[in-house]
Image 1 (cartoon, one colour):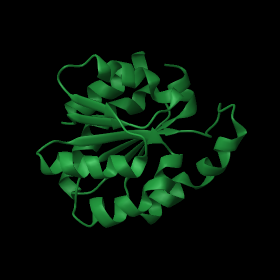
Image 2 (cartoon, one colour; image 1 turned 45 degrees about the vertical axis):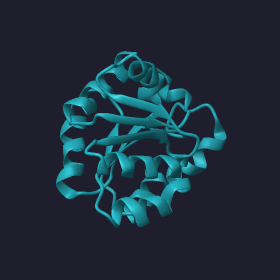
Image 3 (tube, rainbow, N blue to C red; image 1 turned 30 degrees about the horizontal axis):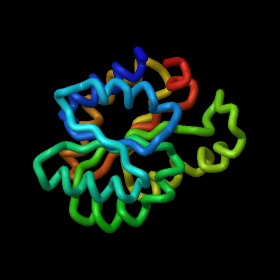
Image 4 (cartoon, one colour; image 1 turned 90 degrees about the vertical axis):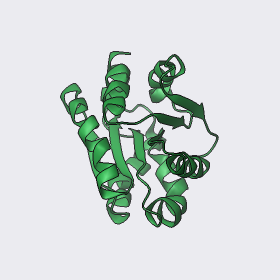
Length: 165
């Protein structure tokens, strides 16, 4: 739970105060941290694109939103990201469990891992790759960057980092 707590603490330092998640085993500890945090709003959503709409509403309600999901969720939400968040310049932190990276035992996850960064680059979404604990210190500054550029940013937390939590 040490990694998850550091990630949430750094997101909060960056101003994030509204969290949604789509179920993922690697996010379970972060979800537990958020469920016990009275200083922020947290809820689950069934689908990533639904979460993008809720994040947009939260931003319009003066919140700084983060949606937590697997990298496969990027594929599910491309249209919502482009035609809502980017079109209307809404800063949202996309916290992504980067399934299919080294250490991943589920072979089916590897195909999405091969194209995750390429998809984010095509969408012109800045990325922060977190593969070790030292990378977590960059999260607060990177989160604030979303507000500066008025656009989503992606934080990729690889499998080994999250499985050591």
